[in-house]
Amino acid sequence: MAPTVAAINLAHLRHNVRLLRERAGPADLMGVVKANAYGHGAVPVARVLREEGVRHFAVATVAEGRALRQAGVEDPILVFGGLLPVGLAACARLGLDVTITSAEVAEAAMHTARTVAPLRVHVEVDTGMGRTGLAPDEVPAVLHRLERAPGITVAGLYTHFATVGDAFVAEQAARFAAVVDALGGAAPPLHTGNSGVLLSPPAFFSLEGTAFVRAGVALYGIYESPDGASPLRPVMTLRSHITQIKTVPAGTTVSYGRTWRAPRRTRIATVACGYADGYPRRLSNRAEAGLHGRRVPVVGTICMDMLMLDLGPDGPEARPGDPVILFGEGGPSAAEVARQAETITYELCCGIAPRVPRHYVDIAPPPAQSE
Image (cartoon, rainbow, N blue to C red):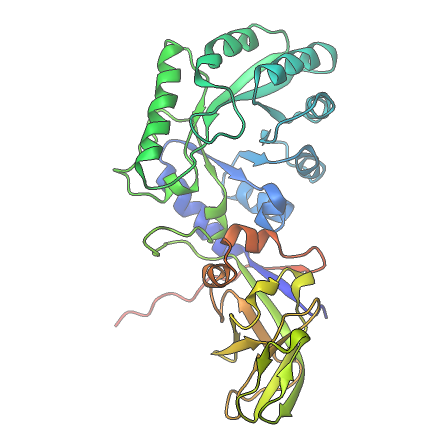
């Protein structure tokens, strides 16, 4: 068996999709499956989303879009990333939607549509992210040219919010609304909402008039809401197993750099997971793991392929082969582990290495017992 696996609970994914579709109202969900579906496996996730009625997808690269096409996904797939001419040509051949991030990309897209194959495009407006996208005052002229270009279909106009739950979101939304107003009622389908919008109180942001909502991290149940409460179910559980247990005397140091010293006689369990599997080295002497329903501390410097746990002299009974939950069901949450690693859940799950197999299960939680 593989030393470490990422268990992906498709029942939890289905729960999250249904909840997000309900919150999206009349707007369609656009399933964001970039970065291998945030580490969860893009093709299996896309198949479940399709079963749940999702008919629009988004990725970051042409290669990610190609993988979905090769897996039989024929629905519209938007490539977010800025593209060079060679990437535009590949999108045209694969039937992938392209993001127009600048006037230069618009010109290249029109050339591609004339010389390679027709292109569907979405125009991105930079309302405050400061990353990619047209300045608001550039949009009318660029959009006018695109809409009249042979072989070009403008399938969307969108922006991306830099924050959640503060006044700057309203400022960005107002800038985007001004762009739409300047188009005089001739705007293409709009999408501004993302996971943060879907999980915000309805009074905070309105999805009225939008055609799509981009659901990314929320699909996977690892969105960290400002108030700490979430109706979502985490989809990924990272688990490994114990390979050895040894009893050591007080004063014994553990792992590279001797960063941890046993304060008493104790039992040290070695676990077959390390930073090469995507478990951050920064968690050394910080994190806990789940073992038989109890929490035990990670001690010593996390190695490339191993980490150590202090079971204590009277801790949980354990033996080699016993499962250890590094985050997810039966252990600390991904959000807790991410905070201890001084990162975010997105990076934690995206960083789970390709050598860690994804095992797909479809297990719903038991129904709540009535009193």
